[in-house]
Each structure stands twice: as C-alpha cells, then as structure tokens.
Amino acid sequence: MPLRILGISGSPRRGGNSETLLDICLSTARDRGASTEKFILNTMRFIPCQSCSEIRKDGRCKIQDEMQTLYPSIETADVVIVASPIFFGSVSAQTKMMIDRFQCQWLGINFFKSYKIEKRKQGVFICVEASERNSFLENAKAVIKNFFVTIGATYKYELFCQNVDEKGSVNSRNDCIEKAKEIGRLITER
Ligand SMILES: Cc1cc2nc3c(=O)[nH]c(=O)nc-3n(C[C@H](O)[C@H](O)[C@H](O)COP(=O)(O)O)c2cc1C
Image (cartoon, rainbow, N blue to C red; front, side, top):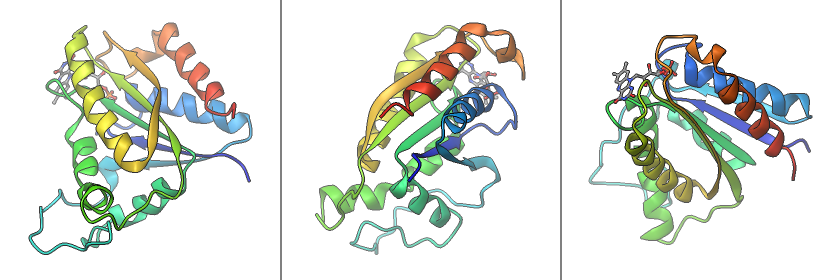
C-alpha cells in the first residue's frame, strides 16, 4: 500500500503562496511513490461548528455537509499537511472553521471515551505571512498542534515562510521551495 498523504489548503487564493508550497510538498512525495489527495477548504461547502446542544456521542459530527468527505480522508491518511496563510495573527477562517468541526471527535476521545483513533499519523504545518511576526506563526502553530492531537497526528515538520505577500511571491523564495521539497522527501521516509 502506498503511503497516503493528505494536503489541506486553507487559503482562499487558488495557487497562492501557501498552496504553492503545499503542491511542491505533495508532488515531491508523489514522485517518491506516495498517493496524494488535496482538499481546498475554500471551495468546499460546509458550515462552522454549531456547538449543537444535542450531539452524537460517538465522536462523529451530525452536520451533513462536505466536511463528511474530509473526515474519512483524515482518518485513513498516514500524513496530514495543513497549509494556511496568516490572517490577522492566526490561521485563516477557512482553516479554523475546518478545525472547529472536530469538536465532536475531541469530545468522543476525551469526554465520552467512545472514539478511538485507529491510525497514528504525521502532521505537517505550512504557514506563510507577509510580515516577520514570529508571534503570529507561534499562535497559528498552537492552534494546529491542538488540531493534530485531536486527529492523532504527531506534529512532525513545519515550514514557515515569512515576507511573502503578493500571489506568486513565494516562487522567488528558494529557501521556502527547497524546504517544501525536503519535507516532501522526509514524509515518505518511513
Ligand atoms: C484577511 C487577511 C489578513 C492578513 N493578516 C495578516 C497578518 O496578520 N500578518 C501578516 O503577516 N500577513 C497577513 N496577511 C497577508 C497574508 O498572510 C499573505 O498575503 C500570504 O502570503 C497569503 O498567502 P496565500 O497566498 O497562501 O493566501 C493577511 C492577508 C489577508 C487577506
């Protein structure tokens, strides 16, 4: 069975800086025999967590929207890569909206003890920002780490690319591109 690598793009900008780095990671891994899948959160139809008063107790979310296509892909992946730009000091709204939809799983694991993670995985975080605010990246990282714990992923690799703003500006950042390739290689070495 080839390694299953799942990429999640949290930017509203198609082909933007974070998605470009994600694509490099995925294509490097694919060239090394991995199977890859990519979700573009901005094109998916799903609503934010409703903090339902009546919830399922089996760790599953009862809202029937396109998030239901993402849950099984996350469950079965060997590696999950989340790519997001920094928006106002944190991950994008699209990324956060996806993460919040794992509250049922968090409750299933930690409160109802009804949900068990079947497959441990590696987690990778790609994040870009226009500025050089390390605290913003740390902020986003804390959110992603919390998410990775909930989906059973070890926070393994990160790629932070600062000083990129215009769409395509990441293409002249060899340091970030090389790091994306390196991560693409590392995640296939298991
Ligand atoms: C709504 C919005 C908020 C942003 N907030 C920040 C910010 O707080 N700090 C920062 O350095 N850049 C900020 N940016 C700039 C983006 O992080 C930057 O343009 C990034 O390269 C976009 O990545 P993308 O092409 O993957 O979408 C913001 C951009 C937008 C559209």
